[in-house]
Picture 1 (cartoon, rainbow, N blue to C red):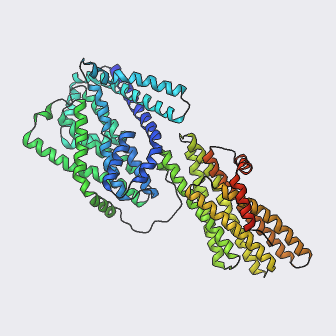
Picture 2: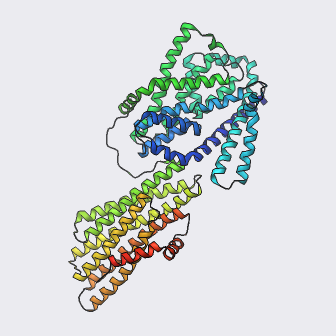
Picture 3: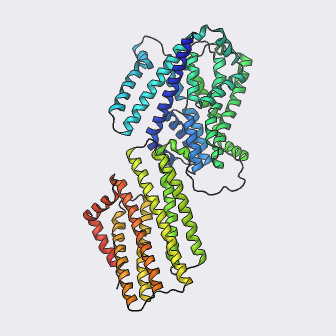
Length: 581
């Protein structure tokens, strides 16, 4: 093997790893919208979790990516530890698909069918289709499809280049001696584990082993222990991703490690017994590309058959090794591991926005009730809820900005923009809740009392604001994109009430029925209540924009008010419901 062969091998390896990374990332993006739906269907059924892990990994071509996602799901509470175990086992089997695809490089023969199956025959066509999609495709899906095809073509070209470059190694005695060392099972396992730990991909390390096997100098006796070690090395990625995560997420990574380590120990013992007792001739034969794929699949399948019934024991083992201990602090957080799957990360943002909205409207409701029954603990409850909303805004805002930098579809981009708008509205609603409860505290402290007419009027506008808040939260929880049909007309009624109540108060003030001090509080309350309805209107507008794929909120609401018959009917109903004597 010459120096230039070495350079060619390094170039082939680089192209192989680059192609695998590009293809894997594009597959994750392309499958992202489906992953959310798949995730929602996972139950406590371990077999269903196994099939999910197998299918997802077969699609995205990376068990490391799947297990990292699983750690993120468990850390975010989207998946239980028991569900994660089944998915992890399935991922180990699903990752073997890559080795079978790469084994196509080893096909030989003049049969036209075999010739067509060889990567050198069909990858140029895939590359051509990919470059056409990349240059002329407008949608994100077409561009992702292009990157999948180009990544696959690059991967196979790198594999072919690498295999050709290492062919000269068969004449190098040192190379043969090196792999004879790996016939020692422990050394073989260690080598496979180290290689995979460095690459952080068992698919990539198996592909390199297949390329080296093209020399014909790697026996099955060397290849089998290396394959076993590769399954241990792939656990490094999930272990690293669990650093700093919650207990259950760390347990999920530990289950992945223990599954592979226990499986390797069991099969390594069995392999050593068979090797010592019977010394099968096949162990001394040169491993083929397809043979390595068979060994890789067989190892993972047998491990799963042995350990699948022990899923509960693996869960108990992880809990024993990472005990509950002190209760973890309930903090607002969004797991950045989910950003590798933008569709799932966006779904998690949606759920967190809902939590923020509930706390925001909780602060408002307590504050509105405090107008009739103020107490210091009531004011503290409002402030606590408002502080949680502030934390939600900080965490969500930062996370959504990071998410917006990921490859998203046009629809996902719009949703990110709308959530960024919404969290500002929810934060302001909780602020107005604090203002309202502070007004109640001031009235009690200064013994300020509104006139009976003023009390009735305040009750009327408070009821209207309470209703618009309930409608907004319900619309957000149900994903009701027609929320503007009920929210917008009520918001207009509240605007009118505010002006009417200001005028009535001035009349009472001029007649000497009300004090100046009461007037200041009255004015502040009306402003806070009316602005709450404005923010509810903004949220309704965002929901409507998501449905209509529009970006101009005010233009969308203006069109809606002028064109919707439902809006006009609801306006009449609310006008009658909240009319003042």
